[in-house]
Length: 194
Image 1 (cartoon, rainbow, N blue to C red):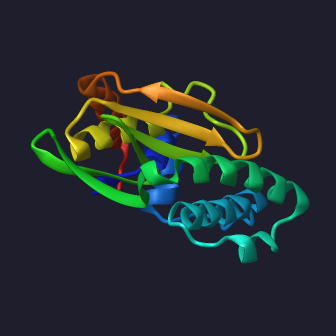
Image 2: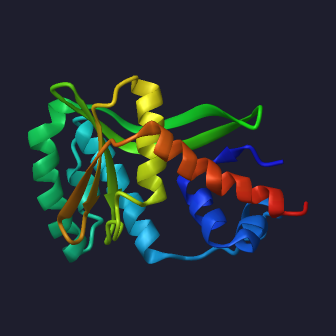
């Protein structure tokens, strides 16, 4: 039985049990050549390199005109805040118990920023940030896991659109509400025949 969930797999399970079964149980997925995903990978690599203080000029030469403009705007913001980033591309696995059985939440924080006593989890989006970021499962999973990892409620989630140059910041609310939302979705698995 599946016992490890990402925010993406939870979104799919919440939306369509059959799609979840096809993708995560039966491993029936089609490869998509998604230009936006490739652009996102480029930006994630550039951001990570910039936060770590590496010279990004060689990589910048491979960017298209619009990508370069967006990157230079973002690069300036990152460089001003570089000293407050404490981690980048941080993978996590958090154990929980549901009905006396363990399950795990997994993901990767694009960057972790510390400002005074606050931990800010950054998530870079190529184009759109979530329409309802407080209700988005990525926000819920990331804030819930960050609270367990860092043992503080002084946590925020910040989405930043690279192309639109807009952001949205969400404050941590309530661990029990987050846990309930996550587990209500996981409980849908009892309806899947394997």
